[in-house]
Image 1: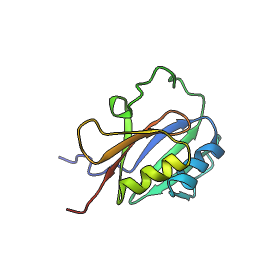
Image 2: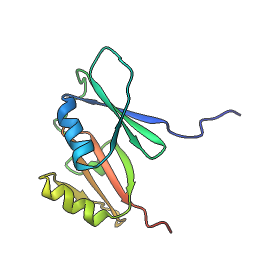
Image 3: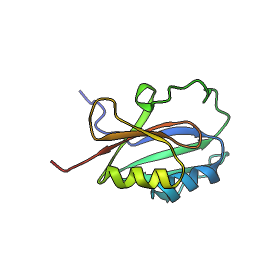
Image 4: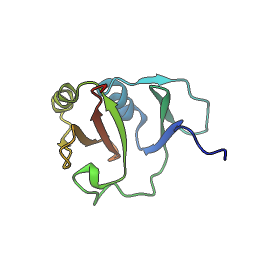
Amino acid sequence: MNRPKAIHHVSMIIADSLAAREFYQGVLGLEVVNRPELGFPGLWLSIGEQQIHLLELPNPDSATGRPEHGGRDRHLAMTVDDLDSLAERLEECGISCTRSKSGRKALFCRDPDGNGLEFIEDTGA
């Protein structure tokens, strides 16, 4: 059977490419990569072998009424080397986050458009 073997990218809808760039590149440190002309604004970001595609389009999904804790909402999960330093960086930037309710070394926050993000510490073990 020829089944999928990896995730290539995740796409998320955003309202403002500049605000998204400030968050994803400026706060999280992700690299912006070349993107073909698609007829609408957006950003493509590199994260390891994968990408995040941010699409500046009208959002049919309300950002209001979402659970406060991102682990109880749909979200994109990423690994980081040092969760505590990321938590400090998010706090410095005024971005609220919550720790995992499961006891894992993980935290959740939302991007400027309310998209849920999870960060899991990868200890390499």
